View 1 (tube, rainbow, N blue to C red):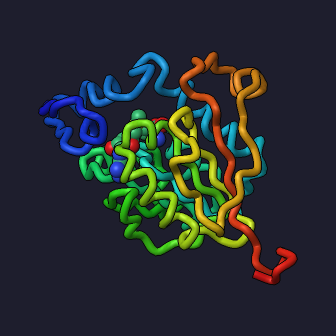
View 2: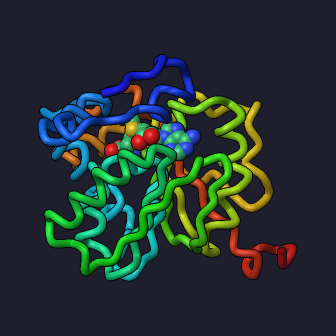
Length: 219
Ligand SMILES: C[S@@+](CC[C@H](N)C(=O)[O-])C[C@H]1O[C@@H](n2cnc3c(N)ncnc32)[C@H](O)[C@@H]1O
């Protein structure tokens, strides 16, 4: 396993894994909760999105999906072709792809795409966007570039959920196409996901893409 400098914005980019790391699942140690809480934290994300209305027919973009901790539950739940995961670490995506095959989910035809969230080089019109424990690992510029690019990848009325948003303040511009519609800070999350998430996860911010046909200005 090659461990890069753990500087903000670089801690995941250059992680590489040997076959032994993959067989022993040591890559799990790089995500909060590690091996011990892998299933719980993955499942909690899927439960959370379903509770907020995600339906199998919706298109989901899982930003910074990593090795598919939540992705495998989401691929299973969604209709064929409706899951897209992106990450800048190709090795994480290779591990995820392997899990998809092993779990018999290849027929769901998920797309996994290597891209930086700052450039969002992916062709999608997502109804839901999940950004779970990602932006807290990014630089300020990456966060701002992501906020500027993401509306172009969302359907009108599309919703995005970003966790660990303690960094979000007036220094960031969410632009004219997104509306801050909810801040999830209460204990409901912990109750319905059965995961005693620590305070760092909150607030979880909901941003919705404005539907131009419904706004008073007709925008
Ligand atoms: C803490 S992990 C969370 C993984 C996944 N969302 C989950 O909760 O299981 C952060 C993930 O974000 C990815 N990531 C961080 N910065 C990124 C960036 N600028 N562009 C793309 N992916 C990024 C990392 O490679 C890693 O897979």
